[in-house]
Length: 131
Image (cartoon, rainbow, N blue to C red):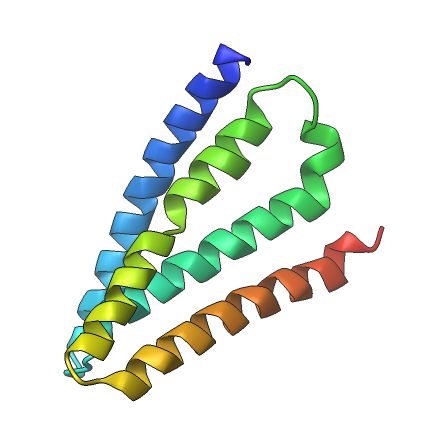
């Protein structure tokens, strides 16, 4: 176990979590202006898509340069992108939608979130992953 990597993950996770809070809160506030029942879920979706985009770009363009015993890959890939994305909040938002009688919105949240993040990862792979 490399404690330097642990410190990098700790720092990156904190920065990613703050980024998630800023992006998620901002997007949720904008979505709430329309009176949408899915305002919170939209903020989480945007954070998760941006985290997926960041991680995919990092992996498909920089993995070889940043692999090995260094500070950057754990800081950015595991720490920042891990802190920026949020499966637990996505799950809780989906549960709340279903629990409040919005079954269709809950199912759409699952489908749109998963398919959008997969599409983003696939698109980045198509552009940068086939070197």
